[in-house]
Image 1: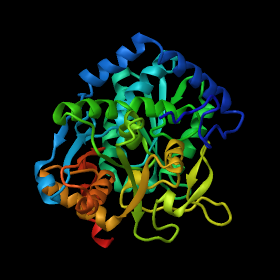
Image 2: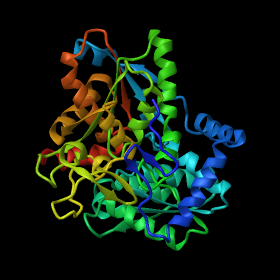
Image 3: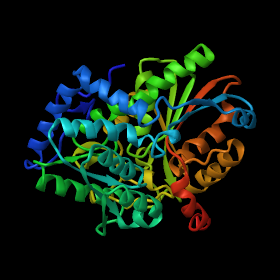
Length: 396
């Protein structure tokens, strides 16, 4: 299945480049540089080498025996992106973009982060390649992800708290964009998800597709066939599209993306773009997003900082429209319960983002045929969320 993008950066009706003219030269430069780099064997070999020797790829595809027994039906495998260096899938994209930035002659990297995992991975890549690094992070997210703030600073990055708007990921992206326009000659904006103007959605997808390529080989080796179902959480959507993309041409493989249902269905209480949003433009791309009847971007809520964003990657919107991927949502309480459930069942403490996918599968498993093969993408580990779970989550 071909999902795009086309030459203008559209996945069907979604995507594009909705940016001021001042940003266009930087995007065109990036598009040209990435187009040339991905055709170059030396660049691809360099990315693969760092992913293998530095990040620890391939990550395991782990048969979760006790989880499978608890569900009583499907055979569940966990794609262990939590075992990557820095503790999440984010490093896959950061290594690729940092190497591209060096190839372009940039010596400074900026990024935005919500849950902090992308910020840590960006700071890690910058330290690895000897580049200056500035991370923009909403004040609200710096509070609930204080451990990751410390990790970024320890790696040599400057962390800039953003006190505007909702003080979360959306506002951090705004500040990063402003910085990029001001310092474009020396700076690469290392965007962390399949969001933003073209070529970011396709570039980030390509760097994350290593997840699905590995999982495909691993499940065939383990079970002799492809899975029946893929499950992943969806914030901006990079971990999920990384798992889904290499399977899109396999019609028999069902795919489910799980958004943040938050604390309720009222606008402002969740981050479920597909069930509670509509089409609009945010931060350079046309996709589904949460906004009010006046067109103003709505506040969002999730117990998980990494899912707390008002829009979703344009390729996900296209996949939903075509029916190739199903999208649903899980609330805070179910995600917190799943966080504890997986920890106690398999001895794996998941990121709260990933816990949303676990929660959905926990409920859906009873209706799945016995023996179905399921791959759930465990996008990150839960160290960063322990304080949130221990302190504030009891109020959910």
